[in-house]
Length: 312
Image (cartoon, rainbow, N blue to C red; front, side, top):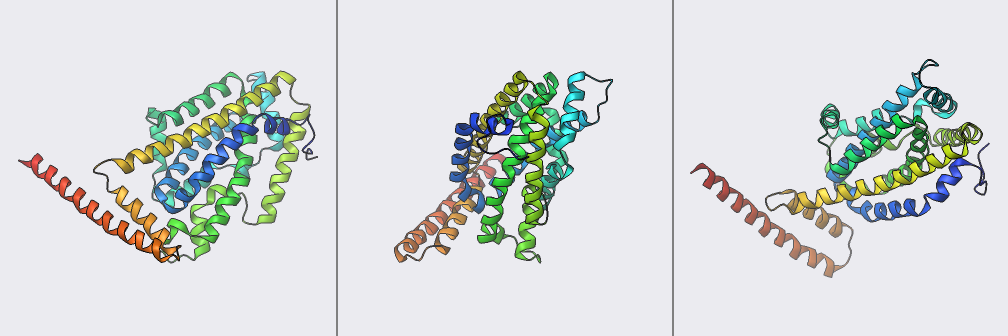
């Protein structure tokens, strides 16, 4: 039984209702950033890195809960019984995200070591600590992530995949023997729950149905309110993480001796001229192109000068 949108007793509907404003805030921020994400791989890679660590944390806790037995904490065992009613291995994202990162030659073991060392970006580290603390405090909070983050990927993933299919974006910079479809599949594993769209839809509907059946009568009202509160916090943390990714990349781009700004602006110029039929716009971007070249040589000259002074 998939709850109807007007079923106010369904936990999923209550989560959606109480997180609507926060959800819209995240969606608005993502829609603004989408164009940049599609054009520049380093932004997309940063997003994948963050969500690899988030889902690694969530799924490590899910594994611990699923592997518990009756001799363990009673609340842990109750959570295991609820999870077993709806959680399926096809939903796991850690390995899928790792596949995407490996395409970009990112060492995921190094990312996990940074997690252990506590050397992650502050907002990301704060969210991971929040997940760990709350699941230890009450394992039922894991049910909030099972609804908010996994189901969000169905909608968000559909947008990402269709956008890549229409416009390869930064993938045009990758010269491989793979077909366009194969190349896209190699960097969007994070968003795929099945190789077949119809099977993916069935999986989503079954997940939602079983989540409803498991939580409607299996939780007390205070427990449901706790899960709703955790869901609100998830959106707040995710929004802050996207802001942190944006801030981090702005700082890197604006660093005086960071040549990534040149690559970034040239990619923007290339994208805009390729998609513009206006002669005036092409002329303007032509001026920008030569301005960028001047900036590039200026940065190169100052860097060489600095290196020379260090060797004296």
